[in-house]
Image 1: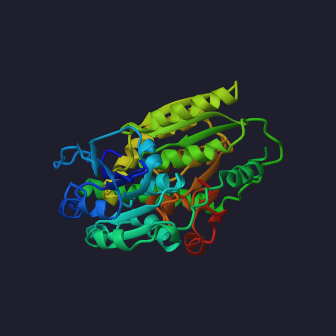
Image 2 (image 1 turned 30 degrees about the vertical axis):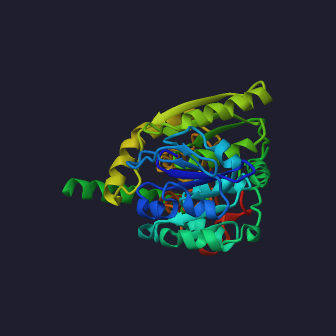
Image 3 (image 1 turned 120 degrees about the horizontal axis):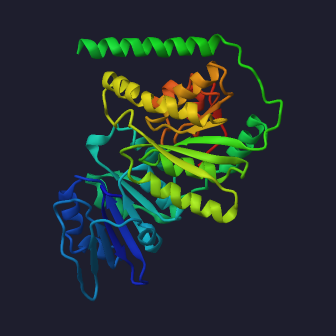
Length: 175
Length: 214
């Protein structure tokens, strides 16, 4: 949470779209996509963008017009509320973020840094993508993906079953 | 440089010796007497390890008590998570007990192999007395570097016949195709080794797979 940049938007209904991007990731790409005025996102129907800047050196000024609102913050202890309110979350590939968003039942688009392609951190995001739980793209394809993806094709993410582990352990230990 | 290599070689030899002993000592199945409580030692760690281990602990009955948590001294996030988990637990079960212990971190992310051996030995000096003092029935861990010295200490407890310890390793959900470094080591030392993706089960046949458990 400390390392991520995050953007979020609201639809006319008042719900929020959020984007979390990892440290050092494609400010150029972000600039062109969002222009920090939200042009591309507005065209797609989003009305609000909440951006987590983290320690980033770029920190756009928040604003609010009739058609678009930009909220900006550096850190929050928990992003649960933002995720809950979001219509779409865009995140880096970190396992914690992926699981948090999917468990909240929110559509997720993971944006990866091409330089990190072989990083083991990507294993989980890639597998969840193969299983149809999230969208996955590189920073270059962000605009393209945002325009073409169909959120209704995502499969719900079933919860884990720690009770199976507990049952196994009780038997193994002899309780 | 020479010193580091020598120490690394010595440590490797020690690990191999441990491995040899574990492999060729008959494993006693001593689950005859039913236990009423299980003294648990759980290794926490930043980067999602704590969240995952707490989910597992959340499903365990109140028989798993007291719960001793080990965390790396540089870990800032885990303590709050553990305390809030335990607070909820205490509201559910009146006789809920836990303790927190910090030991020096045995390995930072991206630290090299040879220097990892040195820092692991350093944290062994703290892990060993702690494990011998707590004498847990069960050690649960899921991959932070800190779990290697703790598990080696637990193994020693077991081999010296001081305590029958069960070591359970649960590889993180993040590991889909490859085990973590801790996982690769503890695959050979743990009593039960869990993976959460079928690809890993195929690669490591001794591993247990019950689907996603966190």
